[in-house]
Image (cartoon, rainbow, N blue to C red):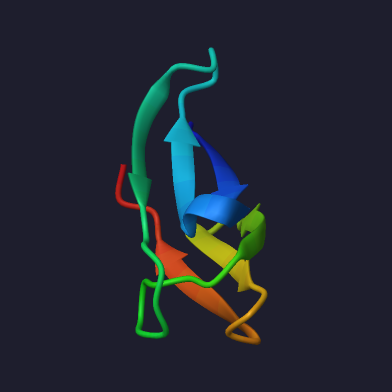
Length: 67
């Protein structure tokens, strides 16, 4: 399983393996789907979804885990 980290100042979510090795990231600054303006928190559900709190866009975005 992967670890998801909100990267507030770079407007993205970073993904690491359980040993702390970088895998990938997703998102960029913006207001569209998959874009962020200051993501602050990430939650992962048991059924395979990632929820990202998007501070300046005043929303929570939902993504499906595909790994």
